[in-house]
Image 1: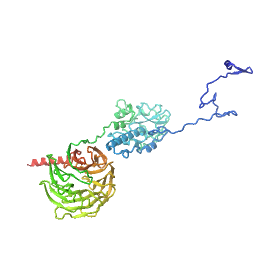
Image 2 (image 1 turned 180 degrees about the vertical axis):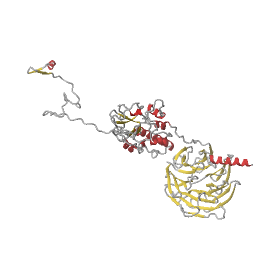
Image 3 (image 1 turned 135 degrees about the vertical axis):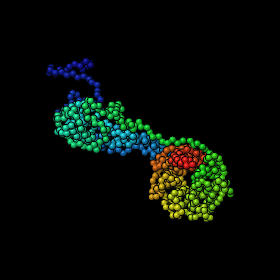
Image 4 (image 1 turned 45 degrees about the vertical axis):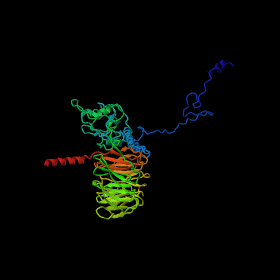
Length: 609
C-alpha cells in the first residue's frame, strides 16, 4: 500500500465522504475530545465517557509579608489583626551586639511598619494613620485624601476616593467604585434647607455636605435623594477644613489648601503625612567621644573583682591603690604623689574619700582600716575589727562603714574612741559593695552571696533584702535625682542591671547587659547611668534613665573594667582595669544650671561692692 491511498476519499452510498488523516499525538494532559464540548443537558452516548475534570492546585502560597486585598475584605478587621507589631525581637538574639545599632534597626522597622499600615489602611481605618500624627510634628490632618460623593442621573449617590480634582458640575454620571467599607448615611442639605426624597449613600466614612449656593441645586430635585440629619464624623479620620463641595461666585477667589492641592496632584504613591514622616530629620543622639582623652599607667593595679581601688574626691584628687601603696593624682596640676606605703607585707584592698575630700579611708588585706589626712600626708587613725581583708568602704558624714571578707559590716564613728559602733551580720559571704545614701540615711550592701541588702541607718535589721541576682553584687549606686532609687549589677553568671524602689521594695528595671557588671555610677548633671563590664567584652556603657536605652558604648580596656569613679564636676569618669591603665573619658555634659546660678550671684555681689 502506498501512502497516497490514505488521502483518497472513501465513498459511502455515493453521498457523503470524510477525510481521515494522520495527526501528531497530543499531550495526555490535554482533552482529546473533538468538536464542540457537550452541553450540560446533553446526554453522553453509551460507552462514551467524558474525561475527568482537571484538578486545580489549591496550594496556599505564603509570602514574606501579608498584604490584604482591598476588594472584598473588611479592612477594619484586617487592620485589627495586623495591629500587633510583628517585628523580630532583636534583643534576645543579639548575642552581645551593640545595643545602639539594635535600637536604630528597631526604629527603622517601626517606621516602615507605620508607613505601610498608613498606606494600606489609611483610607478606610482611622487608627491606621494615628501613628503618623504622633510621629510627625505636623498640625494638619492625617488623611487628606477627600471623599467625593458623585450623583448619577437617577438620583442615586455613590461615594468614592478622590484622586483627581472635583468636577464643576454635579450632573456627572461617571462612577468611581470606592473601597470596601461600611454603609453610612450622608446628609446633603441644600441652600433652602429643604430635604429631598431619595436614597442611601454608601461610604467608608460619614460625609456631611452643605450646598450653600444655587449652582449646587442643578440636579437637586431630579430623581430625589433622601436627606438625613447631619451625623458627626466620629469614626472617620479628621479632615482638613476645606469643603470640596462649596462653589463660590466667580468674582470671589476659591480657597484651596496648598497641602490638599499637592496631595491631589502629587505623583508620589505615598500620602503626604507619610512623606513628612520619612523626610523628617532623625533625632541624633548626644555625641560622646569613643577615645579617652588621657591614659595613665597604673602598675600593679590588681585584677580582683572584689576590690575597690580607685576613688575621685571632691578636692579633684584621684586616689589609686597600687600594691602596698596609695598614690594621689591632682587633677588641677596633673602631678602624682605617693600618700602612703604599707608595711608588714600588707596590701591595699579598698579606699574611699570622705565627703569633703580631705581625708581618705584605706582598707588593707589584714583587716585594718586607716584614715589619712591628704593635706598633711599623715595617718591620723588606725582601726581594727575585721579578721580578713576589707573589700569595701563607704562614708556617711562622720560614720565610716567597712565590709570585709569575714562577711560582716562594721559601722565606725570616727569621733569616738571605739573602733566600731555596731555590726551587720546578714551576709553569708564576702561584702564587696557598699554605698551610703547620705540624704536618706540608708546603706546598700552587696555580697558574693548574690544578696543585696538595704539598711535604715544603723539599725541592725535590714530594711530590704533583694535576692534576684544570680551572681556577686559589687556594683551599687544610689540615684541623686530621684528619692529611693537604687541600681545594682550582677557578676558573670547574672549580667543584669536592676533598679529598685527602696521605698516600696519593688523591682523597677531588669536589663540584661550581656557581660559581667563591675561598677555603676550615676551622673550628677543628667539622669543617666554608667556601667563598666568585664567578661566578655570589657566595655563601658552609658544608659539613659528611666528608659534604660544605651547612649554610648566605650571600649579600649583589654581586661575587665573593675574600677570606676566620677570627677567632682560630674563631666568625666575614670576607669581602671587589670591591664594596669587608668583611662579618662568625657562622658557627661556640663551642669548649665549651677554655672548660671553662680554667675548671677557673683554679679550681684560685685554690684554691692
